[in-house]
Amino acid sequence: MNGFHEIRFPLDVGFGASGGPERRTDIATLASGFEERNARWADSRRSYDAGVGLRSIIDLQSVLRFFEERRGRLYGFRFRDPFDHASCRADSAPRATDQRIGIGDGETTQFRLIKTYGADYAPYERNIVKPVEGSVRVALGGTETSDYSVDETTGFITFDQAPEVGMQITAGFKFDVPVRFDTDKLEFSLSAFEAGDLPSIPLVEVRV
Image (cartoon, rainbow, N blue to C red; front, side):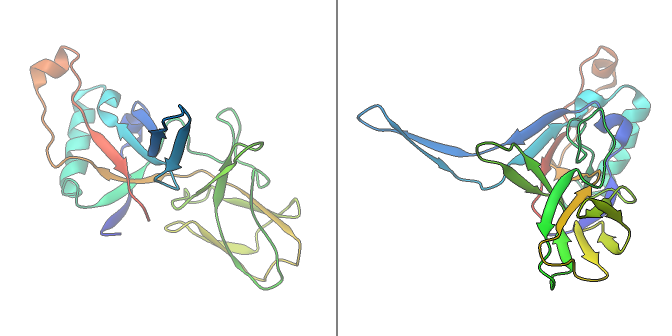
């Protein structure tokens, strides 16, 4: 990926944003009436509109400064998804046993943080690449440990020693989404803003 700044979009604005995941599916209807469906993307891609999170002129100026420093679409940055930013439910705090991220083989010391969606039919494993600093908790066989390090820029955990064969490795965490602005132009009107007409500030997830 091209340039990325390890800085978070203003939280007070971001938590008012709208948006969510998108997938691409090709559907062909056959002569028989049956369908053939094919997923073009293996992973979903999230997009947001942060404009609806603006509450004041101060918020608008904060976003303007942030936009200029990112040079519009040029540099990516962190964004806290207001609906999905932790390994657990919204009414809970992350625990070391929230998500299974691997099984020990006695040799591997590095594991990626993963969040799993669903369980019964086709669970989807999402790679977590931007964990929040200080939020990661890890357990081996259900017992929390501190014998590891975390790379908050990639989402990889490295153990001091390789977990034993068959050892279940779990983790809990908060995380950001790597995004960029999806426009090179922001257009504001003070009179329209005061009248409740909020500008659009589109953001789109980037692959890392």
